[in-house]
Length: 316
Image 1 (cartoon, rainbow, N blue to C red):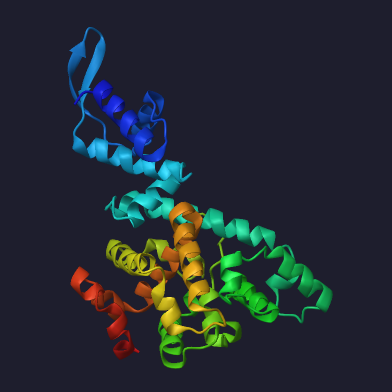
Image 2 (cartoon, one colour):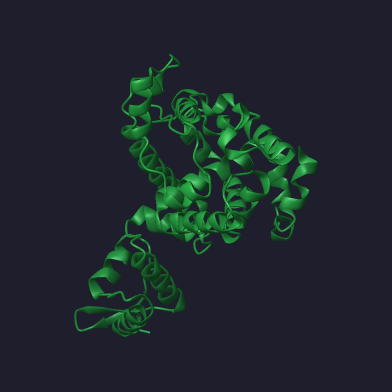
């Protein structure tokens, strides 16, 4: 169909489905940003070029309309959500966008923690401890009700690990964390040291423009091969489509099944509507795949993905 017919059809469908005005200007902007494929030029009407668009442009435009209706509007944010939803396949097209979204989100968290005690291992005086915890922000009520609150000491340790312990120093971290989860099913309120190590490196950013492989910077994960991204996305899909059900299988809280369900829904909504949360969840999946190659092999096919949860113990 031609450009005008496509925009008319998009406007009608986007307004009906998502309450979104899909304007001619928006359509042109998305093409300029490379988010919608350019049409095939057929010729001119006078001095005006005429383009023909197919179903791929229409489908991608509706996918983006759905994201914009959820306030996912920036170019990087849209790319992240399209990739994680399996609407956009090429890793090269999303690698840098994922890195930027994660870095923006993580640095925002890091900047909130102004206490110098997060950057050293000294004993934290009581008043400073209270201040540091306040800087961490308010826990989502759904998580609070489900018993997903770390103690003050655990939270401080988590921040210190995130800002000071290089990710490259934790080569067996993914396997160690899974072993503890599967074999001990710990209480969330009493997470052992091995699980707090899962925060290691998450807020470390090397100041050099080219991140060295040995720098411990979280961004080294984004230099992994394309297949590690695809396999990490499979894990991400398993987690999000199940409402993070594996989490409740491997850990105990003092919340009821109803509050756990509400917390699952809050987590799923967060990753759907906030690319920073989505990028953070994906980073942990990427770490899991890169630090446990045998798990990556297990995820080489969609059929094997379905067996993931039942087979995990045999790899630990």
